[in-house]
Length: 246
Image 1 (tube, rainbow, N blue to C red):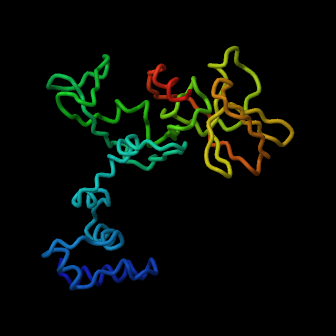
Image 2 (tube, rainbow, N blue to C red; image 1 turned 180 degrees about the vertical axis):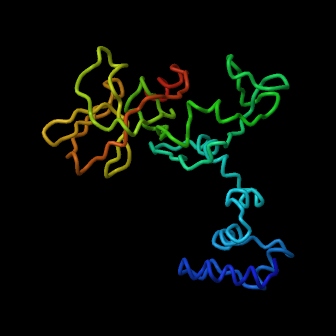
Image 3 (cartoon, rainbow, N blue to C red; image 1 turned 90 degrees about the vertical axis):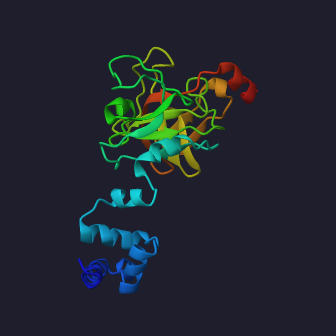
């Protein structure tokens, strides 16, 4: 395909989007090909459309590996609680971590030791990540300073959220570990806590041992329940947690 053909094709794309940022002029195209100039995301999109390429493939050329988003997000420890959403990830994607296992296929039927400082790195297949299904599930990081559900869910945990369970249950459990925990958004951010719905109010109840106050919000209006917590990945170091919290 000649430079002129690419330019004309990008003009049509820019016209459809009503945005000249998608346009790739002859001089810019020459710079991209001959001088290694990095195109803007708009021009990169146009090139992908013109040449029939996946956008993520083009990003890989410039060292942007989209399938590493979950791993990079997991490595960021913030004080506040926040949701993460990678449900648009390619279902065949994988996450690179360090794994300590012998050469050969990874046996998913048995227990495997995955070490941060393992002997070799491996790309774990999506089937191993079913418990962290970023395509169909929602997740959130509990802030390192968020003690709302301690000790059931300590700060720094990763929680899985079922967004089909947004109705507050008032019974059906015999123990606090069976009581539904909800993830909600409110005017100041996000909360992970037990909830009671009563007469247009949502009572947000943290664990008593967290020493945090109960919040009462108008519902709906001041809060939006994003779903119920159905899974948690957390650090087991109670001594360290108690020292930090005391």
